[in-house]
Length: 448
Image (cartoon, rainbow, N blue to C red; front, side, top):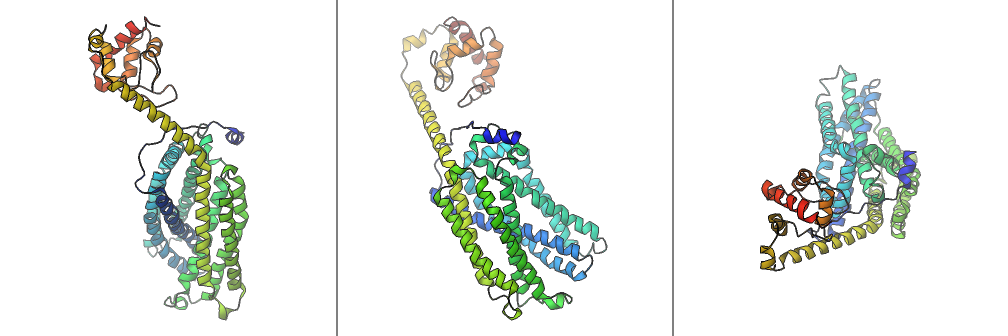
């Protein structure tokens, strides 16, 4: 029921933008966002997928000790990939903040507490990872506790991307901002879970390919470290993880496209994505040859597979950015229009305030509160006409006979109508605010 309401809601919130120039050309920020985010998400894939595979190998190690040793080797890569993921995430985070400020921070505010929890959750997960890695031998006789530490970290790693995807997905739904009430309602918006499944499969596929290389290095004494395991079989199994992770991507990918708002699916997006999918098929053919081919030729396609997969990731990342641009562009035009209208009103008000006043008229002001009003308030308010804020006659009528309420509003205003919120005016001073309120309640109410 609630899901249907979200899908049908069409109320669009249009804010004014922050009128500050970009520090660098927009195309440069887009380039940084796409390239650095792909590097960041690749190391996230390695970290999450490596954690899952470590957990699997450690569970298998309960019966076969060499798998526990294998898990130990995989665990050595996780913290390195974690550190690289964090460092590589700074540039795309700054770029998306700068390019999509209104959208990113609106989504942050709407997902609220859960978005803020990302930092403590990730901190806990990282600490657990280090505890699992450095207490490996100390907890040799307490495998249940040791595995539980890793399992808790993996659970957090699986949950945090769901928060992030929910938040980023919400950026593209300005027409749903008015009905979203926190993380759970944003979670049921279209495309969140398909994208999440896409992410999980990418983690396994990328990690499998990384470990094929890691265990295939000539300087890695696999047979010495794992006498009961076959280097060929382990690497073949990891290739299999990469292959079937990629197969599932082909099943989930169309669902991702179907659940995306159609207004963003231009030919430019579809062309880029379908080109990437076509290249992925070539990589999968080579993967299949590695899995089913003779042992003597095993590994000869690895470089081609890795490079091809890298190109696929580049196409998919570019397609995602094109889609984001397409779907947000109509709303950005509305925001730009509203911003221009607001700035025009502000300039007109400022110009009006700077006009020379008739000295005799100002001196003959019937009440000192009017003079204070002319000095402090005319940039946003006129006596009989709406400017940025309502006319003073209208405001006086609302607070007729309630001077205390009017004084409280001037000192600490809220937001009652569309448009910019009135800033607090406590700096004027209690005596002057009281004089303005008395003028409004007396002189202006006589005009109502």
